[in-house]
Image (tube, rainbow, N blue to C red):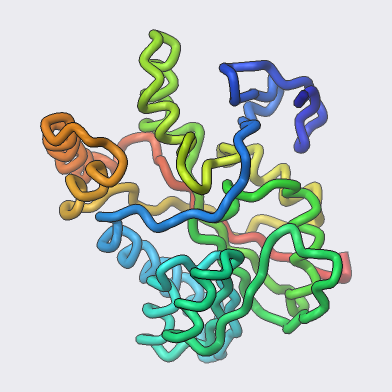
Length: 278
């Protein structure tokens, strides 16, 4: 039973059979079982474009320096590939054994890291940046995770995080449909019944509160694109079997691509800094 919010300590209200929402800070938490996921098909273009934006931000912070980067949950290696193309010192990681072995073949500098860390884990290389690309929301015991990550960070090390927003248009629309009894879209956003469901949903405010509680300071706040012009049908068809529905929805997403800059943002992109002297 989830009675208390990990961020502000307020009680959690039950939304449905597997989702609870904080009465005070609007943090969402699910009771879904954590697991190891697969990449969703059709998102390559939007992910690569977003990764280029992340790398450009890092370059602005570092100027002529060469930072060391650790990505948590590298999946199919899109971010690692983009860093490699730009001659950036990056280390990948995966929790899933099979995915780890595949990544290791392509990127020799890859570690097997599962968060929260196992008790016998003692390999703590130091990095300037730890990057979570659509991974943080799949983890449990987040306060413990944030404390453990400090062991990987250099002085003034930073955590880069991007994840879906509960304040975004897509989440709000799916939540509205869920109240009407149409739960398919809401369940899909939580990745219910998939190999790696979402365990939490944040907005800008409560995400900042969580990191602040663990001694991190927000140093950059922005957003990333949700969709691209290409690949939307393939993306939808990977989880929806009805081709007509996929065609209609992919057409909507194509139009959404041009309006996403002015609509409520669906992907949070923040950078937090930890100073061990605090």
